[in-house]
Image 1 (cartoon, rainbow, N blue to C red):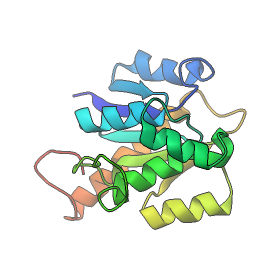
Image 2 (cartoon, rainbow, N blue to C red):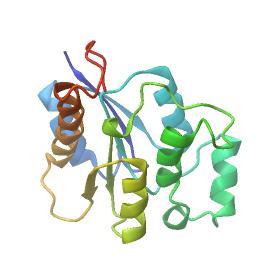
Image 3 (tube, one colour):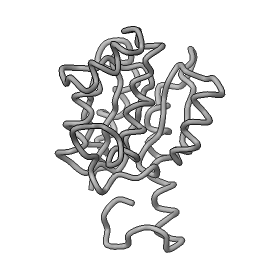
Image 4 (cartoon, rainbow, N blue to C red):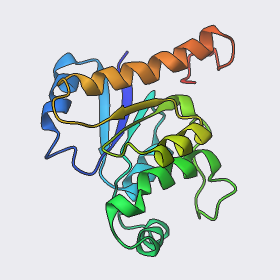
Length: 173
């Protein structure tokens, strides 16, 4: 059975083609790409994923909720860090002001971050959310880095099932 992956990355189709090649060549993954916060929410609400790989710098897409956050932060992807806001919605969205709820299946063990952001404020916020898989995006990474990140995400979820902390009915943890 193929591992279901959502990669939330605004430049995945163009700039990072070499990273998606090994994914498609392997035949082991069913991957969707979301290039903005709105698209990511729609994918997350329509399908259960084994792994979600998230960038921190995202455009808002067409949903007013994300557009307003983006505008409030100065309309710059680096400053807005909508990926971090999206992660917050994933795990705190039921109590936030979002007009839509995150899917019930989604846990921090489904999510990993792959981003150029590498400062302490991002790391501390990810830790607060329970996201433990992080990869700094730098030049010279192996073409298989995306597969490596996905494996780390899937393995941490499998570790929870083995430890008796996750669901054992075959659904992702």
